[in-house]
Amino acid sequence: MSSLISIISAIGNNSSIYPLIVRDCGIENPVKVAMTYNQNLKDSKQMALNATRERLIDEYGASIVWLGGIPAMDALCNWGIKKCGYNPNVNVSLLKEDSKQGLKYNIEKFKKIAPEEVKDMEKVLKNKSTYQKLLAGKFVLSTAIPVMLMGYFLPKFNFALTDKIRKRQESAGVDKIVKPVFENIEKEEKQISPDNNPSFKGLSASLANMSTVNKMAITDGGLTIGRVGTARNKFEKLEMGFKMTMMMFLNFVAPIWIAKAFDSASNKLFNTNVNLDPKLLNDKEFLTEIKNNTLELPKDNIIEFLDSKPDSKFAKLAEKYCGVKYLKNRIRDPREFVDENNIKKFQQEIEKFVKQAKESNNIDKFAKKALKVKSGNILANVTLSSILLAVALPKVTFILRKKVTGSDAEPGLVRKTGD
Image (cartoon, rainbow, N blue to C red; front, top):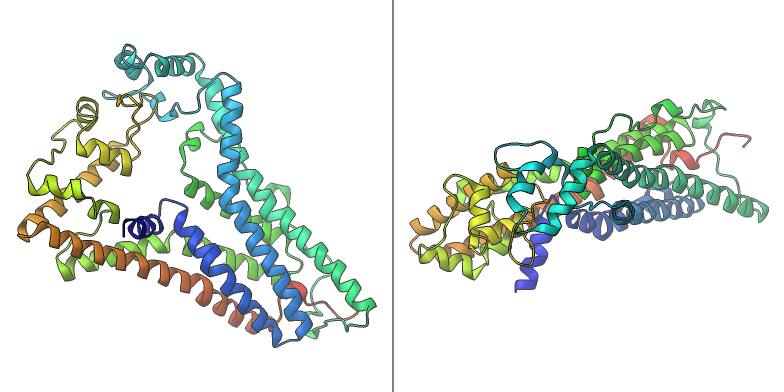
């Protein structure tokens, strides 16, 4: 049961890559490949085979780079930063000092209890400009290289493979695929100029703090530019621009909106706050502390609470769900930035849940109900967002393609008379 809840928790976390893996590789790709075959079969069997091969290479090739490229580049860049004598774990947000945290503040506060970590911060403090440039370079490499691979090299490879196979087909007597509707396509399609490529000049090193998912969203923007730029004719450019823009919305925006709508509706319909993670709703220690009135929450200074009570349940929850980092000796890692606003929101959701649970007069029963509702919301969200991505978007694309080109075939595969 706990394993199932962990899986549901993972695919329900829209700040992680797990929902993207499920939607992209498990649902969207196979459905889109099948729909591509059926749509192009309306033109011809040969068109369907060529379109399906291109879609398979495009979808799964891009998925491998998209899902694995950024973490791989991050790991490689972190290795390089360490070779330069810096620890990439020092969060650049600490360069901005305030009354509760900052490089200077943390160095002074932790110099006796975390001396090794303080050395890492002192090195950064003495070489701020160099460290910021290293992190800016890390951001550029971890996004630009996947963009180039997915947006330029993969399509070029795919198109070259299609041309090679087509020549074999023609030499074997297979008829050329020709559609008169494309006769007016210009012979020389304008490609996207270098000036339109993503520019990384002037990027702040703070961009290095972006999560993998946020970097993937930026990479998707670059991917859209690359795919439009490498498209083989104007109709393929139009279709790529529409499809990629809608995919970005459905991958990174719509699931968050859907989750909020479902959770809000559940709160109103069942008077049950389900804004907490399923694993937390199933946490026996958490529920026991609620029942025993021993769950201690910060009253004022969150950072001071986390430092003075590192073994408290709330500190452990903040570590698990809010990105707070502790060393092995339970000293908070001074190199990491504490997002107080995020933790405050998390605390407020806990307080809402505790209030409703106590008012129910049966905390265990209330928690089970909340867990079922939350799990249902997550599965419904994944299902709905997957249907929008894997079925609705391709259907709309096919309808628009037919209206614009008059053909059911992939625009890039249709050639003019005489080609």
